[in-house]
Image (cartoon, rainbow, N blue to C red; front, side, top):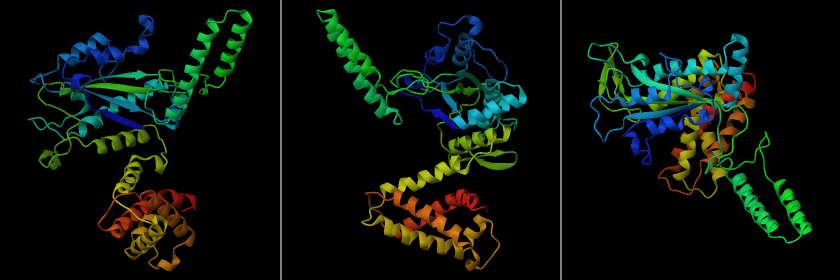
Amino acid sequence: MVIRIHRPSKMADKNRGSVSNLVDYLEKENTGKGVDEHEEFFNKDDKNVTAAEVQMAIDNNKGKLSKEETKFYMLTVNPSKPELEHLRTKMDETTVSDERLLKMYVNDLMDEYAKNFNRTYEDGKPLTGDDILYYAKIEHDRTYKHGEKRFSKVMDYNKRIEKRVFQVKKEANQMNTPSRKEKKLKQVEKLEKDYVRNSEGTIIKEGALKDGNNLHVHIIVSRMDKKQTMKLSPMANHKQSQNELNGQKVDIGFNRDAFVASGEKLFDTKFEYDRPPEYQYTYYKEAKKIRSVSNLMHLTNPKAFAKTVVKKALNEMITDKSLQKQLGYVTKDPRKLPMKTIKKLEEKAIESVVKAMGAGAYTNPVTAGVQIAKQAISIAVKTVSKGVGI
C-alpha cells in the first residue's frame, strides 16, 4: 500500500488558487463517456458529487487564508497487486464490489488523517474525519510515465525502435516502385515485432496504458476544516509545542509516518489481510535507514567489516536478552539458542551491512556498523523465524 501526500508544486502555483485544474485533470477517465457512465467524486456524505460541485465546495472553503497560502492538497491511495487481489476475494465473500470496498476504506482513512493532526476545537471536541472537507475519486487506469525507473530502459529501447520505424516508413513513401515500397514495409513489420510489450500486448511507451488491475484513488482535501476555523496542513511536521487531547498532552503537527502506518493497519484490520512482514511500512522505514548509511561510510573490505560488526551485534543482543525476546525464547542460556536460526540471521545481517557500505566517511564506523547490524537482525527476525518454524 502506497499512501502519498503530494507536495504542492510550483507548476500548480503551490495550490494557492482555484482547484479547477486538478478537478479537470481527475475527470480524464470520463472523457468520451455518457453522463450515466461517469465516475463521480465521493466522500462520507455523498456517493455522487459532480466536478462542478467539488470545485465550488473547495474554492469556497478558504476561511481567512491569504492569497499566498495553499488552499488544498492531494492524496493518493495506491493498493498493491496482492492487496487488490485480496479485495477481489473479499468481493466474492461479501458481494460488495472491490471499488465499493476501496471507497469504504478511503472514507475510514480520512478519520485517520484527521486523528494525526492531534487538534481540538475550543469546546474540547477532537478533530475527526467528519470535520474534514474532502472529495475522492476512483481511477482505473495508469499510464507509463517519463522517468519511471522500473520501465526506463524498456521505454528507451522502444523509443529507438519507434524512431527507426518512422524513418523506414518515410523511406517507403519515397520509393518509386511498388516492389521497393513493399520491401520497406516488410522491414517495418519486422521492426515492430521487436517492440517490448506488456501482458496485454500494449507497447511499453510514455502515455500508453499499463496492464493489469490499476485501481487507485485520488483525494482532494481542503486546507481548512468544514467550520473554516482550523488550518490543516499535512506538510507540517511535528512541532515541539503540545496540545491537550482527551486529557493527554500530544504533539502539534502532522505525523506522516504515523498516518501511513495507521492507513496500512486499517486496511489489514478492515479486510483481514495478512501482510507479510517485508511489505510492512515499518520494515520499509527500517530498511531505508540501513540504506541511508551508505553515504556515511567508506571501507576497503566491507564484507570482512560486515562479518565483524554482525558478530559483535549478535553477541550484544544475546547478552542483553533482546534477541531472545524478539525470537520469543525464554531460555537464558545462549548455548541453547538454535544455531540454524542464528546462522540465518547472521547471513541476512551481513548482506544488509554490506549493502549499507558506501563511499563516504564516518567518524566511528564500528559503532555505526553494529547499529546497522542490530537493525538488520531485528528486521530479519520477522522473516527468518517463520522460515525455521518459530
